Amino acid sequence: MDTTLYGLDIAKRVFQLYWIEPDSGEVCNRRFNRSALIQFLSNRPPGSVALEACGSAHWWARKLTTLGHVVTLLHARFIRPFVQNNKTDAADAKAIWTAAQQPGMRTVAVKTEEQQAVLALHRMRTALVKSRTAQVNQLRGLLYEFGIVLQGGRQAGLAQIRDRMAELETVVPVMLFDAMKDQLGRIRQLDLDLHGIERRIAEWKKQEVGCRAIADIPGIGLLTATALVATMGKAAAFRSGREFAAFVGLVPKQSGTGGKVRLGNISKRGDPYLRTLLIHGARAVLFAAKEKGAWADSLLQRRPINVAVVALANKMARTAWAILAHGEKYDRGYPGRIATY
Image (spheres, rainbow, N blue to C red):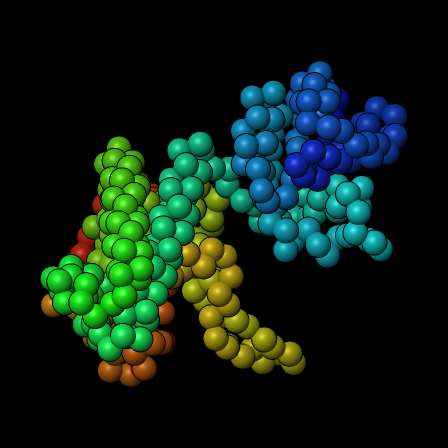
């Protein structure tokens, strides 16, 4: 008997399932709630379930896998062209079912609970950093209104505030001075929260083989290594290092007609957080590393600095994929081609 393919459109409370019965050819497009969907699929013979890689999709993938089904996650960009007429839950489920049968369709690797947890810690850390930056900048602006100019930099500015507390008490009104001390306490608590999150991320890095392997690549540190492994999911989901670099958005846009292809700016597709980490890491290598390597030196002689930074970030992503896909260690002296960008 043929395996049944299901197209599943998920939401918070309403779930639409599209499939064709292999025996009778009956077209089915039914709506379920959460518990009813799990009960229905648990009673069905093992089949293939395709769904969009959106919110809670990875949990559903793991849940349906335990029920015996083979789960495929598709990017929303590849599903939209198959939506006919108006966009509804029923139309989306049918579009997912249709897209899953296209030859060469790219899929998204299902993330484990640990990988999702690490990415959640990264998101929490990003929110805390933004909040701390806003708190510090607000203090600078408010004190500047009373003629107090602080040094540049977060740590230097906060240290200067603490060293000049006696002076600030005489210059700043009492009501503002008390509130300023409360805000300094909130900044101190944010620092403690950030250290706690980074400690948990560091603990996962120690126990994850892939993180330790790619951490040897210049420009890849604690945050980049853990975010890259967790975002990638499985290296086998990408056919090559270039495909992973394209997934992150570090390859040029292509536009062509009549046999001519023009390359533009980088596509900036995929996860902007991981792309930002890779670019910052590449910039640190080009500006701060004592030995940049022949590849980077050759590129810097012929291309603007920002182009070189993105090219190095692209190479870092490719190198990380090669290490994770083939289970190798980073070799600084590995013979590679000189850059031809």
